[in-house]
Length: 145
Picture: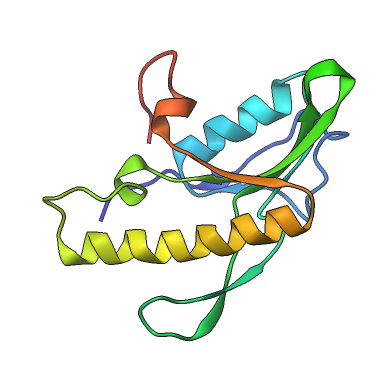
């Protein structure tokens, strides 16, 4: 199992953070994204692990819950605001490759079930949902994990 950086993020712009409690990051990628949200002038509000969305587990058939990483409201074009649910996930857990083991494919199948439910929930609540991977987070430089 990979060794991930975890911890509590110290919010600098407390007026922008609207989550419950202190934000916890479960990877260096999440920590980097929190820093981006906290320091970006276009971000109006953000919350970490803001809500639970029910979904049907594709392997067990049981109902369970999915907690997206972030809820973000930011300035959009033409003085609009936009709100999104965002999941931070490695590309290796987002895209099926031909040479993957069954366990890796199962992880992706579970993620797809979560994301399908999150997409439907977001649409019903006038939001969008998207998954961000290391390509988007680190498009300007080196990768951290």
